[in-house]
Length: 116
Length: 113
Image 1 (cartoon, chains in turn cyan, red):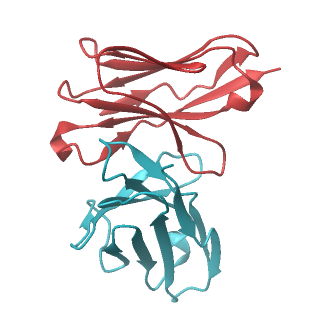
Image 2 (cartoon, rainbow over the protein chains, first blue to last red):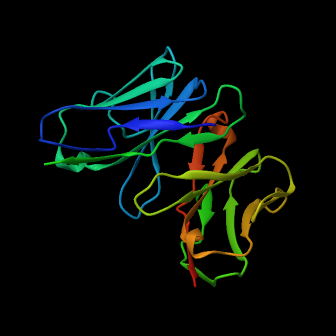
């Protein structure tokens, strides 16, 4: 149980284009999903908290107009990186919290974004 | 003081030994504690969580929580080379309404055959 998928696993795009990353909870309902990014050999950095049916809450320093988050259902959240630049290249990971559990978060496999 | 602190390591242990990983946290009101394992290039995998003082065992893993001293540890018995990874400690902190996890920087564990 508690499986979270992400798609795509790897994407290369050109500067100025937008990229959408999907995060799905496969066998549970998730009222809350989280989006992280991780640079090589660094710890996870929380970008935003996504609640189903409401606006995402962004961490300080994260541009909400650049990183658009939509949580349209209890099993799907999307992150769109708009007008991507090379500095947006990173490992993006989502996690989901099971509606029926306490505070455990289960992570998706991550999406490696490279902007050329 | 950081909210969640871990020694970055690497912690090197021989195969079959006990690996002991430690984590301290700053907020005495914290209630939920998690250990994640992250292999290089992969996302974190939840291996243990503990919500009450004392020990919690699951297979070769034991999580220990001491709220008086504000530390949580992870013991890995009979360490295997496949246990070599970075171990992340995460804590639900009260100031976030217990909604978000705050991660330590991780301890790299190396188990030599």
